[in-house]
Length: 345
Image 1 (cartoon, rainbow, N blue to C red):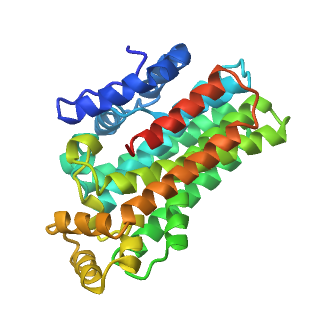
Image 2: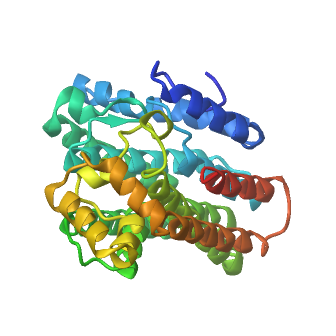
């Protein structure tokens, strides 16, 4: 099995994914043996007596992607000198939790494409996708028991609960033209950033085994700011990139009636006429006027504002790493953070 994350899809998104993998290649090479072991462990823990569970489970976890969340577990434990094997299970747990949220997200959002491939709900239907998502959540908790740390289980169970709350918050805000930037930031903290935070937090807890609380807190905050960076960059890309680059349909957020930071800023700062165009698109959940709306968010400074918000969060993440002892793993985390914001250019 390849040491690097692979894309099995023949879609146009392959070239963009390959470029990203090349940029991160030294990082993956640093954790090559562990990353390969995690890639072997994930399908091994997807076994089920129900064929459809395995079929959908394997389809979604093997559909490409960089597996940044489990990678963060490996980098965190490496940075703190962990020498055991439970970090492999922890990395698999994080990937299962992430995959479960993807399955549920795609059903809620009626998404038809992810990572350049058909979503599971598009291929098999909503009910099987939701139920296999539930299976992945329960399998993750079985693995948590094997890790055997109440501190880690407390973090992950709390994170899972808050991520679900974030999903509900996002759904409740669909079409909400009054959502503020602080409210939106709380949604993305719960929905997206929290699993990155949980990855670095639990990795640090595993490595420190009750010691070095300052380093544990530093790595928790790093994961949080990295996760916020990643989502804000995605918000920016939704109005600057194409389907091949993103692996999903351009303008999906608009078509789902979701206000992300570019639209929130534009509604407050664009002309009354342009703001009315955005409001109508959100109310109708339509991306038919996407190119016009892209020109609006560009013209009123919304993309520049979102760009700056992402860069600011990235700077906070990098500042956290300055509090750790330098070494190849800490430098690798800097590389991944810089890669995240490099998608803005």
